[in-house]
Image (cartoon, rainbow, N blue to C red):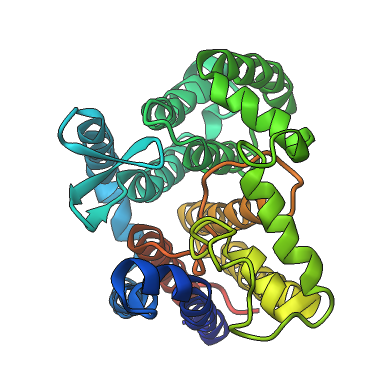
Length: 360
C-alpha cells in the first residue's frame, strides 16, 4: 500500500492525541479529576481505528460494491433511530447520538461512508446517464438528499454540509453537466434561506459571524475566544501545553475548535504545518484516485479524499472566522471516537485502493 499515505495518517492521529491532551487538560481535571481523561479515551479509539484501518486495507475494495446498499440502508435506519425520543441522546442542542451515558456513537458519521459507497457504485454503473436529469441526476439527488434531510432534523448542519458537498463534488468528477450545477446553485440559495427561516438560531449565528462583538457573551462568544487564541499565538506560539484560552475561556477546546489551540500554542508555523500535513494526505489520496485501476476505485478514492478535504476546509474556516460557526470536527484531530473511527475506516479503504493502483 501507499506507505507515505499510511505514515501521514498515523502522524496526524498521534499529533491529534498530543493536542487533545494539551487542550483538554484543564476541563478534564475539573470534570473528571484526571487531566488526561480525554486523551486516554482518544488513544483507545486511535488504536482501535488504526487496527481497523489496517484490516480494511487487506479487503479488496471492489467487494464493497456488493454491500453498498445494505451499508447505506443501515446508516439510514440508525439516523432515524436517533430521532426517536428516548433513544437518541441530545448534546449541545443536537439529537445526534446513540448510546448510554458517555459511551455513544454518532450515526451521521458512519452514514458518510454508506453514501460514498452507494454514489460511487451508482456513478460507475450509470455513467451513460449522467448527463440526463431524469435517468441520471434525479436518482442521485434522491440518494444524497435523503440522509441530508434526516441529519438536518437532528439538526447537524456541519455533517449535512460535508455529505452534500462530497456528493455534489462526486457528481462533478463523474462528468455531470455544468448546467446542473448552475441550477443547483439557485436551488441551494433557496434551501439555505428556508433553513434559516425554519431555525432562527442559524440567523443569529450569521449575525454573530458578521460582527461577533455585538453579542460578546452570547452568540459571538466562541468566535471571539477562538480569535483571542489564534492572534496572541503569533509566529511561534506560547509553547506546547501553555494555552491560556483552555482555562475555561474557549468552550470544550478539544473538540471543533482544537485548531485554535494549535495556533495558540505552536503559532503560525504550527498551524501552517498542520495544514501542510492535511494537504499532503489529500495529495497522496488524489494520486491514489488518479491511478486507481477502475472507475469505481477512482470515484470511491476521490470521494474519501473530498470528504476529508472539505471537512478540513470548513472546520478551519470556522475557527479563523471565515464562515459562520457550524459544528464540525477536524479530521484526525478533534476529540470524538465516532469521527476518528469513521475517517480511519475510510482511509483503510483508500489504502487498499492504493495497493491496486497503476504504477507510473
